[in-house]
Length: 236
Image (cartoon, rainbow, N blue to C red; front, side):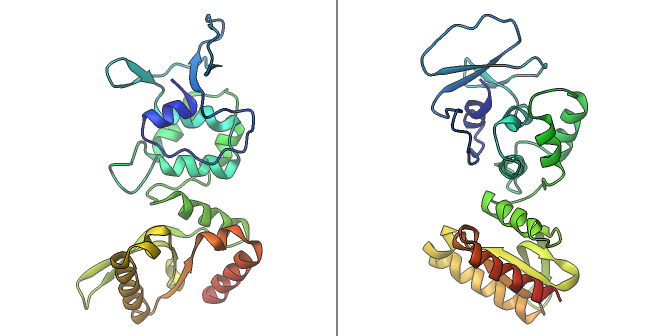
């Protein structure tokens, strides 16, 4: 199994696809060039000539490794969503982590030619290990696309007074500016909201400027421009 089928088998979040000809409902299988391909409804065959060590899922199903699946998506995804996919494989949560940054570097070195390699090479320059969500990655990419510096991700701040450590989604450490993405859980879970509010109150007490981003900020250009202006003002 390959492509999005492999991602599903490996428990990796499927990124946003804009390629109308790629059917996520199909089962995707890769075979070497020249191998016999039978025609089956709901199955799409792809050519993949490069060696890989299959990942066995269940008793009889095998698929390509995570980084190989990422590379196969290089000709299908936009640059931004390829970064999102790569980040999702390197989650801060160990239960969700499927690869390290060095695995992508090693793959690119060992595989000099494949369709989508140019996109993969560009995406690798923007990928970051240790993120928590795809929306945080999309926020970071939008920030840099508007000329903002690359922030640190999951930056840990020590609160000596409370003997606690707070994690910021993104941070400009030298300026003490923290960027937090508020997803659905922040608004739907009162306990999560209370924890976030307490953390941000303590961080502001410690001299940090905290700026929050929501999904609506990412959806509407005018809202995003206002958010960029807010971040720039805080950095200055």
